[in-house]
Amino acid sequence: MQWIAMLTMLIDHIGAIFFPNELLLRIIGRLSFPLYVYLMVVGYHRTRNYSKYVLRIGLLALISQLPYTVAFDVLRFNVIATLLVCLLTLKILDIKKINLFFRIIIAVASIALLEIVPFDYGAYALVLMLIYRYLTSTIMFSIHFIAEIIFMVYNSWQIQFYSMIITYVIAFKPNLIGKLSQWRAPSWIWRSFYPLHLTIIAIIHYYISLLD
View 1 (cartoon, rainbow, N blue to C red):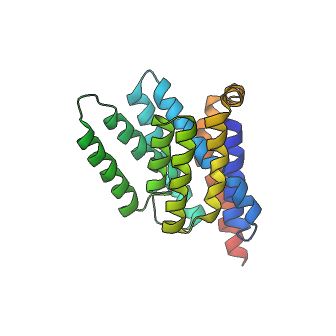
View 2: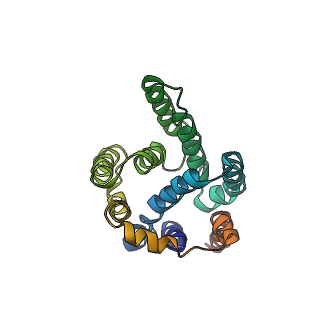
View 3: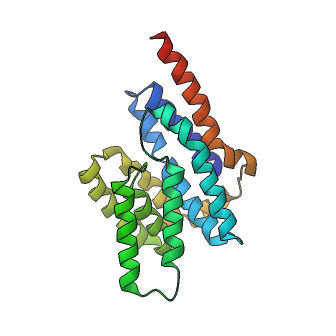
């Protein structure tokens, strides 16, 4: 799944920056984000050292911020920073001593933070992460469908519906997920891909802008 996530992200970013009118590239790119969210949830569940895991994600977010800002010409936090906030939220929600009321307050506060402070994907990222963390099969797919409708109205994200392809596979094709999970990228490629490919895209984008 890691290779698919990286490839579809690369296609999406090339489409967004260099070929904004090529809708097919953006549609393919819709497969990337749910894969990254799902893999982040799996990593959170399996990690033996949460502190190191979060520190690594935080470092990647920091390294990626400048190339992300230059490549997309935006003033908001990159998606790794968004996922970092989501991971921190999951950790708090999983504290057993916290009752349901305070868990809801924490989730709502995180959603507000992701929307008020400009984070890439915003509250959608946390909603999707909560779906993958706590729901299974039909319920997972149904709640994701409802979430897509809400965010389509809120953000006009019509093509984001294609991300449900990944949720369908996760919910109803566990054997396929198991096979795809075995197709792992070397850790150094997986960890460096986001900031590295953004840096290359930012450099190319900068020199193209000089020629215009």
